[in-house]
Length: 113
Ligand code: HEC
Image (cartoon, rainbow, N blue to C red; front, top):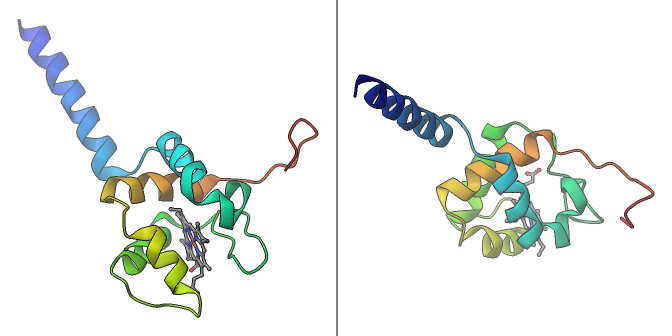
């Protein structure tokens, strides 16, 4: 019984820390592929007038996405980003930031990026 309680405590702490200390980069990558890659390119490397968004601090990405989600204009093309950020949940923003912080574009003969 005691072990069960300890195990339960352990797993609930794990679950808690995952949500409060940082996002899940794997979930972030999946979300990125669903709605960000078309403009920001593979691994957030940027494309044409769409800024590079990989390799930035979690706090920066989080703050930017929250700003756009609040419908606040930052640059000349903010309306595009506001549209993209409005449906994001806090958890999705944390996941995206965790993924983008370390995302690296690696051109490779096995893909056609
Ligand atoms: C329709 C094209 C488009 C899509 C899709 C898109 N973005 Fe953007 N993003 C932009 C543009 C354009 C800007 C610059 C906006 C401005 O002028 O303020 C931008 C800016 C940003 C910035 C701020 C960059 C900086 O250096 O300040 C972040 C972070 C960002 N986008 C993340 C995302 C994420 C995460 C997604 C997916 C949920 C996404 N974007 C989807 C076009 C897009």
